[in-house]
Image 1 (cartoon, rainbow, N blue to C red):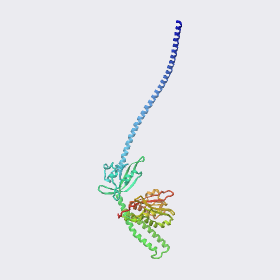
Image 2: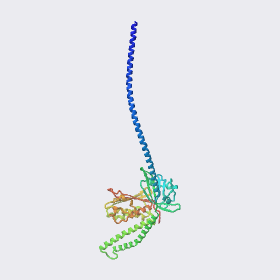
Image 3: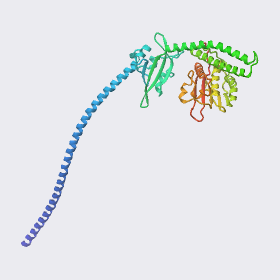
Image 4: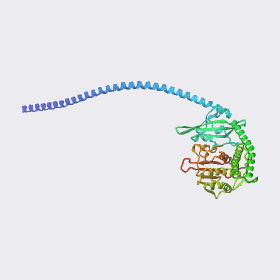
Length: 450
């Protein structure tokens, strides 16, 4: 029994030793795998360390380059800043040294810069006006001495537009009560499509006005002197054509008729020059009275009827039912109607159309509108159409008798009446033509001999 027990115990020990050996082998294998993994990890770490060292060296080189670039850029920025500052100082010095008066305002109308000429012109010091509203420290007046309100002051409102605006009819009253006229140009300052302020250029035009007045007075005097002999020529030509001093043959009649028509053109020119002189000097007599606008317009149309019929023009006239008589100077109003209508007839080719209408524009104004299918006004000359002695290139050959004064006179009369005139002419389109608009106040004019 003891022997069997001993054998049994021995077998258990052997079995346990075998199991232990197997476990050791398994552990050994695991350790071997782990060691292999550790070796691979070590290899990778070595590679990573090497790569890190490479990256570190590259970063060091990059950092050195960045430092050099930063120092170079800093120097460039400093140099550029100095250059910009120098340019700004130079530009400001140039602005301040301009011979004309100059003001720079921000988008709210506050003065930023005023040059020495403007200081002398307005009798203001820079320290007293900079940072203040333009309209408050430099009030402007119109020709009649009335203060120009903020809303109507184009010099102030110019920064809201995208192009320069000229305003030659402003006056400034100094503290010593002396008054002078100014030519003014207002230009917006635009940055990235946004208006950030405005530049105003002022020039005292007292001397120019005196010269213009002297020229106008000379024209008036010369025209008056010309009127008498022209009237005499006209009178004798009419007598001869009427046969008061004997019968003329056909050849004599033809030549005399040419003399008469040429003299008539001269009379018209002299009368136009006298009207212009009167308007500019301020001696134009205004005598308003109750005037039937529709009736007056119809009489002007009747005067033009022979020319309308001769050119076979289709003519229409419409006078609004609500249009009644208004306080106006019939002489001046007739001149406006005659000039606009005669232009439409003159510059519309045969077989064309003319439409004239008169209606109310709101409760306070009367609107005259005349549309034709004529030659139109070239776009590059439309801004000159109301200037003195100007005639568009496209009509000079078609009508050689024009004076270029009609629309100038019309504009002067309309504006002196408190109205406005404008036109539209889509020149270049198939349907060209022109539409003129005249807007007049219904409350009429006050009697004046100016």
